[in-house]
Picture 1 (cartoon, rainbow, N blue to C red):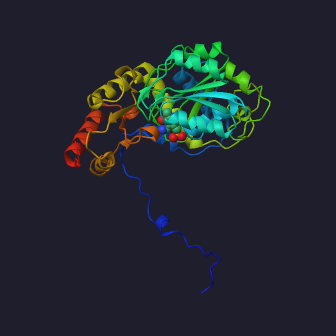
Picture 2 (picture 1 turned 90 degrees about the vertical axis):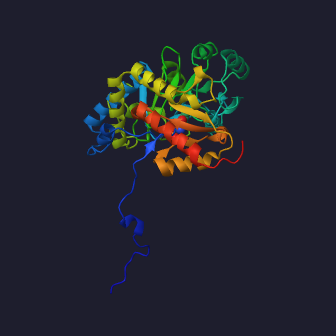
Length: 386
Ligand code: PMP
């Protein structure tokens, strides 16, 4: 018997078939993906620099412009999850040593503050407990005090279940020569946002929430003010992969006749993203916003956490029922109902449970099923006190 040159044998687990169960994804994302989007992602691969791929990327750009309500030509999708867009925005718009102001009322502000700190920005935080929001007056005072080049605010704070008011903040930033950066990963398609009308300079989202595409791509758009700042920097951004001078060329946004190789984009992910944006275009933004609001209202009688007017229509936070162990309830619901709901995240851990009904999942039958699962857990999980 001849000696094999390999010393690490093929792993036994890979000799068994893939198991990915069917689940109701009623947490804060990823959401279930409609068959049409899955099928798009399953089409044969083409080259990332083929003309057909450029056509698909141009369709994606148009779809993002519609979803964001913007005419910005600097509109692309990141090859990466929502965090890639967070890093792209900060890395390109800010140079080391510059002042950045971050509104923190849940985990997403905390994350962006850390991203900005890591690249050497001078970070100032305005902090509220999860579920809190900032008045325009508070924002203006902090902008006047810290003179930031960038102000960050989360539109849909998925860790708290809050949808932050947006009107007037872009004008405050403009008045003080500061860029306004907004995170809509958890709210795009579920709650109204108007990038141009609301004077938002940089806006990003994720693919896996109300858009109902698989995780792994993240739309982002920069207006003229943002381009002026990021293309007139003294230093290069710390990331090669996220450098907008390269990405704008890859996406055909820089006016140059040829697109050059920068990185190999996630071809299947872009097929799926294109299809999810096509569904949003067919449905219409207003109908999509209406559907999310309606189904949130259907689960809302359990909610005691967020002021009614500020409830995020994609992710609903529920105060943990008195005397119950939230972890036990979530495990019970997964085991007996094949349904994902989640606990809090970051500062909201131990405060809330979260139910998300997004896009394709946004149906009355699903809201009813989620409520039944919750009621079943309340009946069968042990109550320790209260
Ligand atoms: N921002 C918000 C508001 C989110 O809800 C999420 C995802 N939960 C992210 C950013 C990060 O996105 P990803 O997990 O795709 O990196």
